[in-house]
Length: 332
Image 1: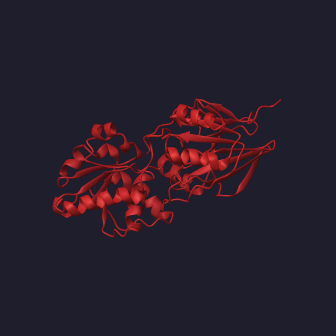
Image 2: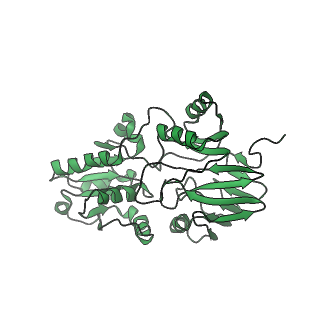
Image 3: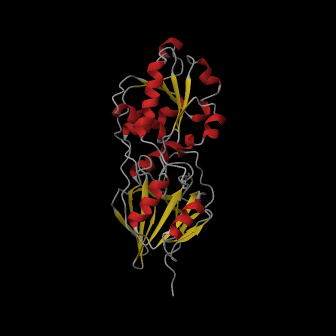
């Protein structure tokens, strides 16, 4: 008797669909790849052909150069050797998608990375009931319960108001997090210019080209120190404590990440103002999603797999961890 989902093959280098000779989020260049989103631990250059959403392909081209690209819009259905494939929103970053696979009367959803919180920079997560749900577990421990987004950003604005002679320097990853912080601040009514490190410029420009309104952005490099007093500045996390930041007016060092829930991580980065702001589902959202989709099996990828597998089994859902290599948590 055939096992559920035996037509897909999770391997350390990615998920392989033998019938179609195609990989999902492979960690090395392959002949044919389906890509869930543009973060470097899922989207790599060098594939002979790649299928992804138009936004993800634009991100890949910005990062890796021209692609042999096959754009797939949300909801569009393609068929490869008897496997029906469609991309639906994952709510993680711009263009992020879950990949829905249907074959032999079974439906498998490979979610990639996802979150359930509203995000003005990307389409919201679309629940798809399925037989097998392949889920991440980046924050797959009960301690990880993310606070409300605007409550965290209120802390940023309060620090700015209380220290007009200083600036707030926010470490935020270049793809997704930086643009989300900016966009959420705009939604909250913050209309002042926001200054950005040069390493964020290219992807911020791409987001604007894709229709995401980020308001007025200015380069932070080469600006007089006095002009940056009372301003918000965004930079990659690696620039928070390097020579570049020393020329700023007594910066209040902030970091926007779900990992700011862990105090040791904030101390390691000398973060004065931790902002718990994640682009991944927290524990409650992971478990609620599984309950909502009612899969027969859950396959857990990168992250804290053991706790989520244990939770599934306690709730009479068959579950197992997948040994996928090369996925990192540093995009959060």
